[in-house]
Image (cartoon, rainbow, N blue to C red):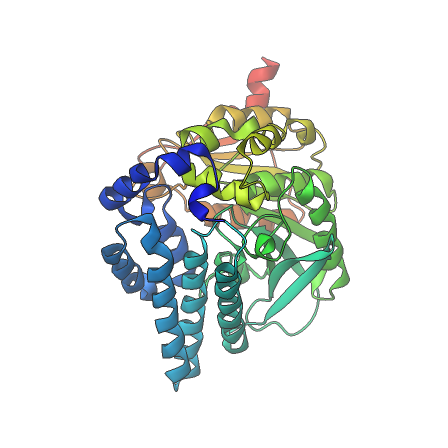
Length: 414
């Protein structure tokens, strides 16, 4: 089926608007994809994205341009005589293929071929990486949850604190661990970076999203971790960003073995009206394919009404950190405050004044305040060390200073 006939009505009938906005706002018309892809890649990848920005003038340009850039990095990796240089090129090639895959929202040979190249490049990187990187496929409903298992540099033996980590609907597992200087690996964590149902590679291989699929997948993921000698089964924590803030919360609420979870760049609105009906139609178009409903908007709308953490949040037994901007344009902050109020376990919050969904620069509170990834990594490390968490709101002002505010539970009690 022609991709132009798939997805929500707004996407099919108003493509000219997307193309017009893309020409004026560039690649980041709907989200800061350059910023979040560069974070794991580093500054060496800036030229790739600058070339992409100069060549992409409409939505249809994205796949061929990023494919060409990925292929160029492959050629450089193959020609490299220094293994460190080859490692870096393979990593960059894999993440450029990730970006080339993103605009394809239908099951087709082209998507499978791009994903195969992405996997091959990342495996080539893994073989040259400065730490242990292992491909993992966790059996799930006749398919698998695909993952990469990372161990910190210099690891020799013994159980480690471990973070199970997922990105959002547009950020697959390859973006979860930095090429160098990763916040979790540098703190001694093992990291299982995975694509859950509907996310990243999983739907390419037939594992689609349903409202309960992540709960079921979470059990398989935790069981896998417990089976590995490198993982300290008493010190497993969760980390999820963007729509991963919803999915990881589902896992955390139903897996009491987790010592804590940190979620950020929130998607907490019940029914997801803001992201699916008011934001760029690209979000809904992709999520419809993730759910296997790219041909049926009415069925997707009915399913989306079931995306709601309120029935689960009461089961949360471990501390749950929420990191967000108070002007999130994809999920109104009131819903995160409400969930923190309902959460029976400690639910601290780090909130940036005027922060948008991605907590991207140049918002003053984000630029001058605490690095939110550092804050979350330190907080999770404390959970694995047995330190107690407490209900609080650290509110970051435009000056970068933190103002301690009352927690939603306190307001409810008053």
